Image (spheres, rainbow, N blue to C red):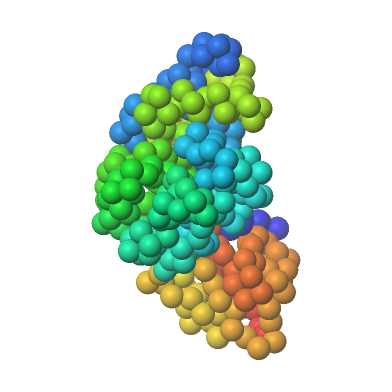
Length: 343
């Protein structure tokens, strides 16, 4: 049976060019900052985002956590959107690793109101924790791949600067946002002080994320990466795939967006589902299961038996993520499978 895997864009496999680059990669000891391929990747990532310096890390979660450790001190407060990845999916790392308190702001599909962000900033008071950082996420995972508009990012950044606060962006899929908006990623990163982005999602590298920012910030972050066990040695072997990803895989993300839109349009008339194609901006489709005799978990299991892998994100919703290992023909086949199910 052919498997069509919509669980996440993290299931992407490296391209032949990446595999070849890994085989021939030049390496050195990265803890001594002597791996030339890692240096190339970090400089390339920083340049693409318009920042001074970069740091290669094993994962996006480590990148986000290192950023918070670098910007805050224990007892501080960090402002986050209520459904953000950093709050929802990073195992309480903000509390455990940085010792910070989280203050959430409820957004609209992940997009926070700048006025509400400003109201969440603590005034000076002996009883209050000190607000130290504002975090954004673009695209927004639990917002269904929602793109945070540039004007919104700018407005929140202006609020942050009014109070002399840094802004960190969880930009795991920032290139999806830039493709959707028709802007360079650096235009989005302009309204941040640090950005984490993933190489191992839609860009299809097998491992890794980058954290970028000013040179002094990255110097601090490098030490915290070491503290967390993220100091790697001849890691150019995998960094080389990241270089290929940044050079060859960004523009093709539009294909994933087009496939997601096609999928949503094909599923919108199925009686037991509710899906709004107008809400599909990037590579995620959120399905609401509305049939009275079927749950999202039961539908997920049924689809698995038909060769469609996906994730139920609640008792009534399923997320489908398109990526480079799902083509247009497989999208059409998936629509036919959905239509053939009877509940």
